Amino acid sequence: MINGVVLLGATDIPYTVSYSGRRTLGISVQPSGALTVAAPRGTSLAVIEERLKRRGAWILKSIRDFDRFRPRTPERHYVAGESHRYLGRQYRLLVSPNAARGVVLTRDHIEVGGISTDETSRIRNRLINWYQREARRIMEVRFDACWAKHGSGLRPRLIVRPMEKRWGSLSASGRSLILNRRLVEADVDAIDFVIVHELCHLTYHHHGPAFEALLGARMPDWRDRKARLERWMM
Image (cartoon, rainbow, N blue to C red):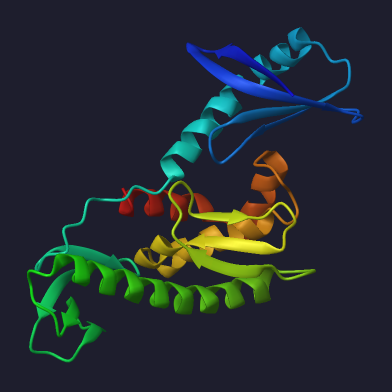
């Protein structure tokens, strides 16, 4: 493994190179924003950097896209009246000490019952647990629907958990598909976009033109869905 830095436009971009017996040079931008190169043995850094500069516009765009696609977590105080999102809608947090214990979704509120308004840590814990249960329930349904339409081969195991930097991830083996718990705050179109995006990685393990073509064939409006997700979850 070799590390280097290439100047693309006015930006220095670090990259890593791994060598193997392959015949062609492959360039990938990882969801973390890392630039990686897979090269045939003996390929000089001069040849690699010349190829990186030729693909410079695509590389910079991919890095920007991944940066916009990372979840932003707004600061929460878990006090009555605070706004929380669920399936694309905003709801006000209602804390009802005299109501039955638990979390209930009403027309305009997410109501936490059986707890004092000043017990913010307990309110937080109950909401987190409720969101996790809802995320699992909703995403299982959406995964079933997306797999029925686009899946083939061995179906990955669905995992729903908090993720700091990504909305979804497919394991290198293709056996596990991980979805960010926060996706339950977005609408169904956005959830489906993330699932289909990850399912496309069963075919292509990169974000190059072939991957985008497959994603476009399966979901022609994926760019609109992605843009809405980015706007909502800032």
